[in-house]
Amino acid sequence: MFKLGTILFGVFLAASALPYDPVIRKLDDGLRYQYAEGPDGSLHLVDLWGKVSDLAAAARYNPDVQNMYHLFTRQNPTVSQPLVFGFDALVSLTNYDAAKRTIIIIHGWLETVTSDNNSVLVHAFLEADDVNVIVVDWSAGAGAIYYFTALANTLPSGVSVARFITWLNSVTGSSLSKYHVVGHNLGGHQAGIVGRNVEGAIGYITALDASFSGWSNNDDKFQPSDGAYTEAIHTNSGILGYISTLAQADFYPNGGVSMPGCGNQECNHRRSVHYFAESLVSRGFTGRRCSSVATAMTGNCFLLGNLNMGGLEPKPGKSGIYYLETNEAPPFSRG
Image (cartoon, rainbow, N blue to C red; front, side, top):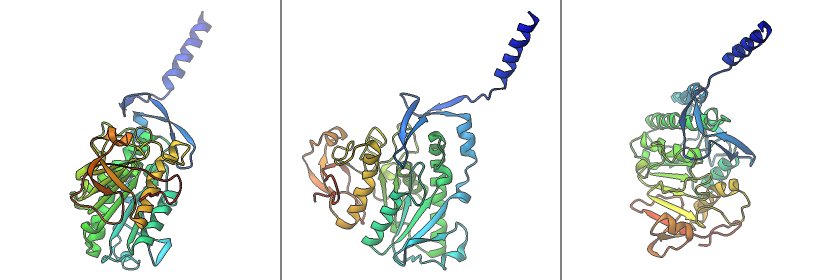
């Protein structure tokens, strides 16, 4: 009896030594564990219930220190120049030109500055126009394998990017109206966070298939008022991308869920980047106006008032929901 009691006491001690990690938030209704595809196409089983440990990991992220900013221009289209938040003298040693428009690109979960999406967008912007392109590397926050932690880091990173822009403008004299902020995945929502933290004064903000998981009931999601003109492109609605409208103008190519030429969800999710990049150069992709998201997803859109998707220039005063069809391979635009 004594021996059995000793064993049970030992089990109790071992159990009590296990870390207690209580759940403190459920991101959305539905299954707790779901698969999400990373940028390399591999599947990750993610926990959509936030635990104390997730917030503890997020608390260790300091975007003012850890975010990095890489400047690309036509003078340095492939090798970036660093812009370091708070180092005024360094700006004059780069190719940044305050007289030109400035593009801010924000990547998504598990990505870095060298991810394919960034390369595609940098090349397209510099081919289309002589602009400053700044790629935000927030991989210190977005690189967390636990999705909940990366999601929690999205807000402070966006606030920090807004502070970076305010600082850069104070040094260079550039204007917020000349900025275009573009984000994909978690970066799509972060682009909106950036805009609202400079009082909605950014001239043009684009959300490229902004993330779905964790954002349905999230007050920090992309909003129409985040910029002077806001636009969202939906290519994997309700799966990896957000399903409902987010911006002043929302486009649902091919119904917004499955894209021609794609065989998996990650391809669908990334198509938003490739469509937008092509729009910068081609000025194509004419959308037909829809009465609702439901009609956009079925293609039953016959209202007057077509609008081009994407492009270099904002379309102030334009709004609505739009449907269009694309080709399976580049050129994707049908005009």
